[in-house]
Every structure is written in C-alpha cells, then in structure tokens.
Image (cartoon, rainbow, N blue to C red; front, side, top):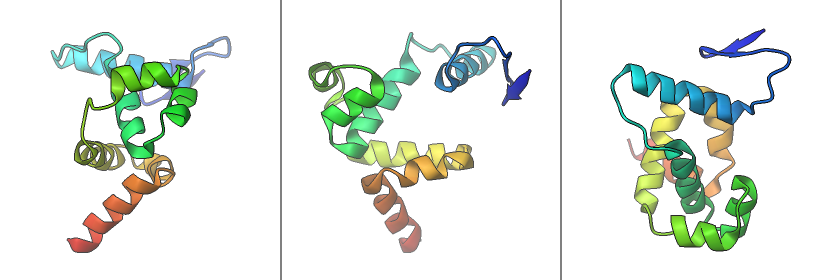
Length: 118
C-alpha cells in the first residue's frame, strides 16, 4: 500500500495520480466546508495550462480533449496574470511541482522575473 499526502493506493488501484490528488483536494475542501463544483480542479488545470502554453493543440492532447473544445470552453476564462499567480501559489504549496512549472517557459520566465525584482 502506497500513501501519498493522505491518498492511499493499493496494488490493484487503477486511478491515475491526478485523479487521486483531485479526490484528496475535494475531500480536504469538504472537510474545510468549501464547496467544489464538479471537475473544478480539471477545469482550473486546463484553463491555466492553456494560458501557460498558448497552444490549444498541446493543451488538448495533455487534457484528453479536442482543440475546439479547449478554445470554446477555456480560452479567455482567465488572464495571463491569473495564470502566473496560480502557478506561483501552486509552486509554493507543493515544491515538488517546481519541475512541472519550469516546463512552462512563459510562466517560469515571469516567475523568475518577479523573484529577481523582489
């Protein structure tokens, strides 16, 4: 049995890591009395990934969706400044995501510029 941040995995578990973390986040939000609309974490991830990459095709492949759905539902849902703030908080809350954030050049560059200015 593997246990990562309070999410237990058995050898027969077929959930992806992202699904397990989503389940854990929903559980934590519920315990804190915060309502989470269905798929809120997926929608958030897709919205900010699209802003970070500016590439509907890459985001669609990553999210398991079509570029037209990505553009229709996620483009314009947040600003680039929102994405930079989101990834800054994400990186601060979960330092192990540093490599993931670094793989998003636009975000990484903006966060480095902010750090150098401080």
